[in-house]
Length: 102
Image 1: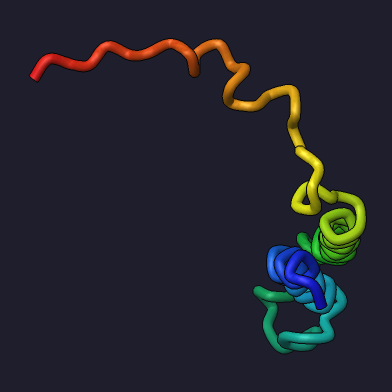
Image 2: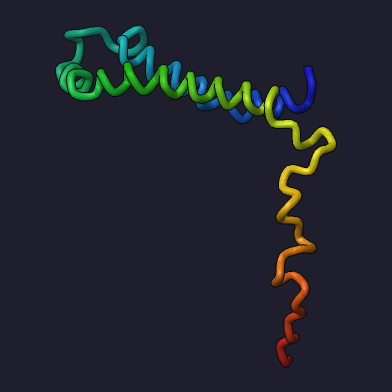
């Protein structure tokens, strides 16, 4: 495994796990079952659709960002990422500031 893959995997591990947790919670695979807690049943009736829909969306987005980070973005491999905006060409970098009087 390359360093770039491990770095991308580490940055996308939390959203992947969070999306999986929301999905399992939305489908009631984890947590209390239906009928055990009336407060939880009311909350699940209100937010269950949101958990069931946003959980997989978060996982898909995180997976796409993982693929993009590993296979598409190649800036550590020799090419300059933002060649037009290097620090030497910005207008305010050539201006020297006056030092403050002590």
